[in-house]
Length: 243
Image (cartoon, rainbow, N blue to C red):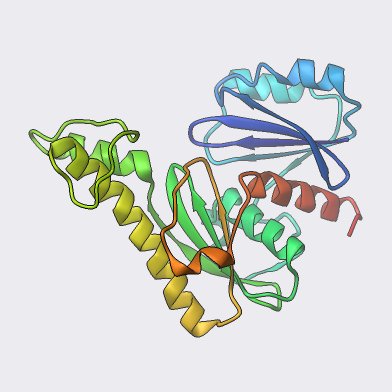
């Protein structure tokens, strides 16, 4: 059984894979990872991979140090099943690379745009030859809502859920519609531009934030919330001789 530990900006995800099949996902604090002992007691874990976008505190490091299996720490020197053309691989977030690895694994030989809508929204492109060209980073949903509140004198911090008219009818709906529809139009714009250049483009959507797409391009979007976890598992298998 493979143990996948994905430590993000807001939460940690711990997943168990039986070779390529995901068995369970557990969400935990990225400051404690208290679930690890129970997970290792429940499953016969043989190998593990750890990927993090934050600096780990002593508590988390201690939990990881107790794991009874070898750990692959994902970094810029980790061998990958795709070609990385990013000019500064040491600054590339593991989640960005893991997502394209998973998408390429599902559809090898295809041009793919991966959109990860989480704390940030990232846009990643991997071509039909399995070459990752890079991508862009944009503020995510909550980051935009908080920025409007924090960097203005009077705009309130509003909930992302609620009325969503085409044009805001009050300050609350103006902010919510402006942010959510802005993200929707941004994503649709990326898809349209990339489709012009790569007509057979496939699009993957992943991440923690959900969006509804009122677009004619809906049919080319594959939604997979666990794309990063699947990519990390693919990298772990690749580094242990499993193709």
